[in-house]
Length: 509
Image 1 (cartoon, rainbow, N blue to C red):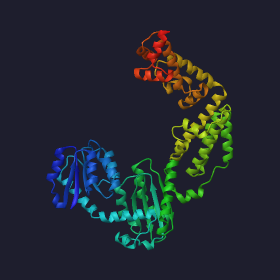
Image 2: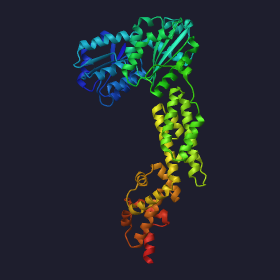
Image 3: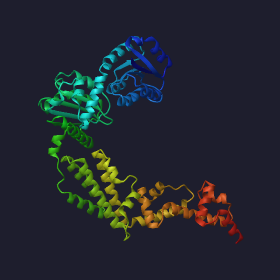
Image 4: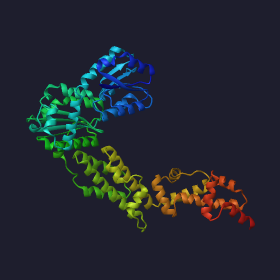
């Protein structure tokens, strides 16, 4: 018996679907219904139906979001959407997600039954699709596949006859039923074993041949696949790798195609990136030492504009030479940490600090982690340029004696407005510094953090007011503490006695 689920936020629609359709005629059974998206998705996971009929707009989670999540868990599950919306954008996304049928309301028995008949045709191939998916995963992982399983999948090229492999890796995730239908329909692909695989972050098409047809011929047969990927999203990046190999080399071809795709994503190259061509053209920048010298000299002399220009020239050279992203990141970090070491040396005033401890205080995210997870050439370039300029500016400010003057301005500001809720960002703005840099400079100049300094100013003023006979609650309010209990705790910690005790002692005197 084929299992089906109906989901719609309108009770009458659900009931009409249950009663007006002769489900037994199609050997189908309604195993559950839902009127909101979240419980509907939970129902799908629990019941694992063959078919899901769902509205687009529902509370909790919309129908398209449900399909996107469910398709990853159950790739062969069939979805039929019904909606009052005729917007092409909805239909386009539904098609990309592999929706079998898009029914515009009002719903009729004829529309639903036509969709169910279409679903039956797809469900009949369900077992074979599951077997193909298992074979796909084993090929990608480089695992051995039994000949019996291969034969059961009824693939045109025997496993022992594989002679060449071409793999396309695309940055667009999610099932697209149009691609699967294209592969099944295209005549020139009948002589190959073609697998369409969907992963959490990428889509992959693998083409295996029993002869030597060549890369160009195989790519020509898959041209429609690449076109559909590109039409579905503007930010579409595709990598390809081709190799004459048997089953044992498929995993390596898969990894190469993914690497080519990752490079395309990194440099935002919308053209097809060929791994083999990329490898042949890859080179390193001509003189790394020259770049490092320019960076360090520019930082020492506060030449911020020169740093910006040098970053641009270096990154563009890496791009033109197709330098591997991991090597670009390595050089960026090397320049960056050398610049930090120089900064520490120039502004340390003879006091030695551990660089890694200073970095932990200065950066919320460790620079090496940020750079490692940076998947965009543009973002990496902007980060590199901004951080190197910040280092130069800090060195310039310190060497010019500006920091001491700016910190005195902040101290005066605190003494004037201590009763306000002074934040790090407000004080940094007064100092005309970046918040993290201001915090570090204030501590270096004053010998304590700005929070402790503000507390000291407030407590000294509190002592003066208590000595003058003001009530403890009034003192708390006047020096900026709206929470009376918190003021009492801070005062006791600062003076070693309660505010009331301090007032009593001073009253006796």
